[in-house]
Every structure is written in structure tokens, then in C-alpha cells.
Image (cartoon, rainbow, N blue to C red; front, side, top):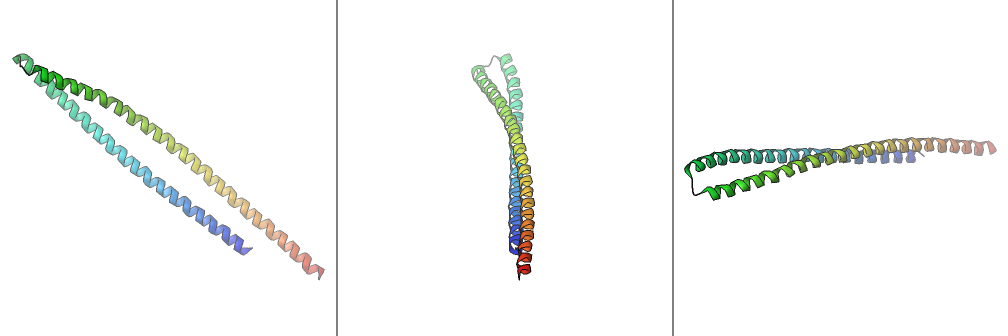
Length: 151
């Protein structure tokens, strides 16, 4: 019976080790996701800054060309249209980032809830195993006493 108790403890320690490993792996992934999210945000902000600066520069050039009646007007208009298109494309990307952040937070919350549920179930299992072991030991002692008293 002692070996069963030891086995239960070893299984519990194994389960705890697996849980610790899973938690550690989850935390590492969470940190990696957070780093990547920050990198993506920085890249988007950098591109937005460049696009805004480029828009200001081209607006200034446009004004100068208007004054001069420059024959390059068509090319400048084409570039401005491309900038406008790029700005329009950046907006949904920003919204997509926000949506994915929200989805990530919801998934993380669901993960944490399931993890708590698992911990509670493991705790309940350990209590049941301990009680089962105690009851079996009591029954064995009772049977042992009956055998000894019948001699």
C-alpha cells in the first residue's frame, strides 16, 4: 500500500512538472507574442510616419508646381494618388491589428479559465485518491485483525 501512495505522489509530481512546463511554455509564447506585437506596432507607426512626412513633402512640391505650371503635374498627381491608396490600405491594417489583439486577449482569458479548471480537477483527483487510499488501508487493517482473531 505504501507503494501506491508513493506512486500517487510520483504521478502528482509528474503532473505538477507537466503543469509547470506547460505554464512556462505558455509564458514564453506569451512573451514572444507580446514582443512581436510591439515590433509590428513599431513598424506600422514607422510606415505611418513616413507616409505622413511624404504626404507633407509632396503637398509642398505640389504647391510649388502649381505656381510654376510645371509639366510634371501628371506624375505628381499619380504619386499623390498612390500615397492616398497607401494611406487607405494602412487603415484596415491598423484595424486588423486591433481585432487580432482583442482575439488574443479573449483566447488568453479562455486559456486561463481552462487552466484554473484543470488545477481544480487535479486537486479534486488528489483528494479522491488520498481518501480512497485511506479507506483501503482501513479495510485491510480490519481484515488483518479478523484474520488474527480467528487464529
